[in-house]
Image (tube, rainbow, N blue to C red):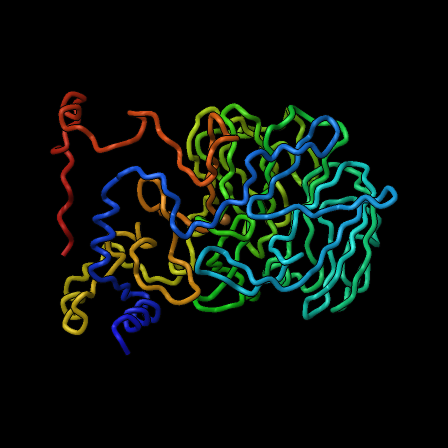
Length: 456
Ligand SMILES: [Cu+2]
């Protein structure tokens, strides 16, 4: 066994022996320089966000919904009926560069394409099953004839492997809905079968929006090195996603300062509710999958809980330009595979252990004793097909969050903005090391706050 594979095994098998060599020190030194650069990380996928997502799709000038990292289902008008085709089947999916898995989805993607219709539309969906087991499609939140509700055994026969079923109904009410299987849902939803279903109102409700996005939260259990998510997991999910992508692979949401922005959040995670938090502004929840929230009942919020099996529609008008974090506020939901199952070493004195280990491995160093910031960036060897604990390159240093994390990029001229570029801060508007003279001037006495003695 060479040293590299020993390091890998040591860090995976024991968790405690999180090992890094001289490269660690180099990485830490490097991150200490808070230099600005505006290059995208070398392995960042090109964002699929169109520069001007303002195709009008409904009366009253209502614009098309953008699904970051995703797509919209094409609908063909055939004799007054809008016809779409969903193909349920396996998907070789990339969560983030370096981490792929065999998932299930619709039309070769997870989540499936967003369905976009207008109130009153007659809709016909063909569903072809290319999964190894039967499936159905349930149109979550829509009011329709009972036999179109897609509950296997209760309202229809399951769609056998190789079969194509026809669903047909009228989009009676506008709203932000979802679709998913109702046959072996534990397996099929856990493997990625879910999608958004948006019905625009015939007459616009509330102020017209300039941007409209759809984001599905999801969580997965994908053991390090495994190729298939585990649908039996009930608690410890280690891949967290927006539209089945983890940061830094999540497409940013590029919007204009002062524009009215709508974000439609959906949650078909197996087990968890996600408190989705936006920085730098407050928003209102204007609708759920049950309908519109009356203006008199809309509270200002900075975080909204999106429970499993529901949607929350938020509207906001950002007033400050910048790169604003948008993420699940569960701290373990902005963390990836390698951060799970690690023993707690915070505050542990590992001096003796390090001394003994260095007899066999000169570069050994126990990690995690002073906290775990920066663990994603250390260049620690990680196993094939796995993701670091968290994070990706940012304009100042490594961003210590991954998973269910994306960036709301508020720009003065969003049409010209490079979705991969970072915000250029006006001079003097970035937090920086304090100036000793100013500290004195402001009456801050650092000597008054002594550091407690090191525990022995
Ligand atoms: Cu969460």
